[in-house]
Length: 167
Image (cartoon, rainbow, N blue to C red; front, side, top):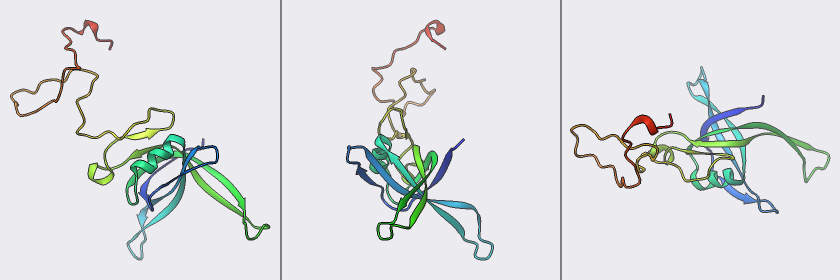
């Protein structure tokens, strides 16, 4: 099984690029803190891991993430190699994370909201905690608290009995 899950901070703003055939790609580096601090200095060391996202995931990362923001990355390791342009007899080897999913980490002030993008899933803006009430079920009225507002509830249907509920 080849699966990688990283949580860290972007070291620079992601840059969206297009291949010659028009496919979006985004290469970015995530600084991931190591678990333990250095015994002599007390500082935590970090690993800098290169990640590559494609298509809608690349567009999502470049649109909603900036330098210093926390990001959760899920993907797989890929080994690549290429010939040095200046020295044709030299081959360079790289190990990158091929990104499948990305998610926001932290609170609204930390990373812009909660939510994420999964490759192959629906594409959309991040969800915020202050969005409209969920549309799956009618909201329950609070007891003795008239100061709360639920917004527009016209899209909700009141369920009178449990007989029509599918679960």
